[in-house]
Length: 443
Image 1: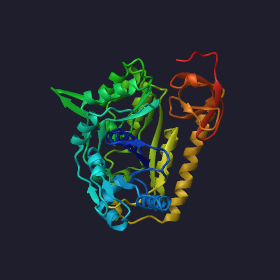
Image 2 (image 1 turned 45 degrees about the vertical axis):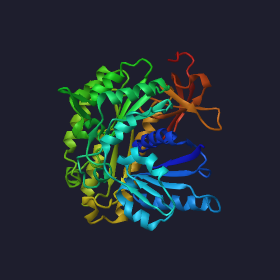
Image 3 (image 1 turned 90 degrees about the vertical axis):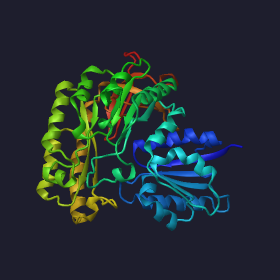
Image 4 (image 1 turned 60 degrees about the horizontal axis):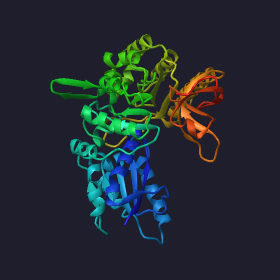
């Protein structure tokens, strides 16, 4: 008898990928996906520990589930992901409604855990077993059939930035075998996927050796560039130290690699970068930037910025603002530093919150203005868009241009999955709006 499962996903793209793979595997024990989260037999929260109050968001969501299922049969409640990995014992003690906590490297065990879950027996599965996990999922087809799909090629991190929990929640760096990645990519392409984004906590650190040959992310990109049905290739998230020349060269030799680079720097101050243990300087970042621009002047950049990191002075913050003048970021994420339990920076003295808020407002005003001006510069131009879907309750279609900008326009069902030209009529900070350019042929 089939049962229903719902997964609520928080955080990064890798969590989205993980949730899809969990759906693929629980089918084998009779669970079907149900988008109605109030009518399920199993409720899974796939959590993220990067941002502040991540743990409290989990408890808040479980409180909502408890209320929704009051008077009904309780579903099996699973907390998965990085919060589960970091807070496993505390979560089981604090919230009796949770049945299972499972870390990111144990998802290959989820079917057995669900089948063996019994009333009043709490299950904690947070061992690191990355190799076994990927070997398990390699035998299960990835049934993602969205136009744009994620594909994990690397997990974990060996960098140990002082603010980051990833080495503790995802473990050390691990790169999947090259052929296994290509096999999964081929399955996605057969499913109708037309854009693949390669994922990793340090995706450009990908390195897999076999028979004396080292495969890098550049080899993956070059291989994917050969598939005629695939229209676009992207990757995220990168570390400046791992932007090697072979990867940079792909921006001139691989037509399907999009000219958009998300390259987090976190701060424009060398002093703060040192305190963060980033292992690079602003000069190193700018050298990578210049190499990429010189090889393809169509490239645009986005980044991440932590504001109010312990020790940040007004001069340090001004150095970050100066960096924004040198690199006209098309889109970036910025947020006030919040200490993550277990990290080195969690022991540092915090900067006054009001100062942090003022600095955040200042930098976001500058970043958002960049976004607005770049989007405005595309008005009255035709841009190439990969059409992903029709918007709910609207006669509008959604896609993205080469820079990952959202484009909303009039269209028809037959263009989904195709590359089309859209004449941009107007824009705002986050979106471009237009209509199909009938003078240009669809791909």
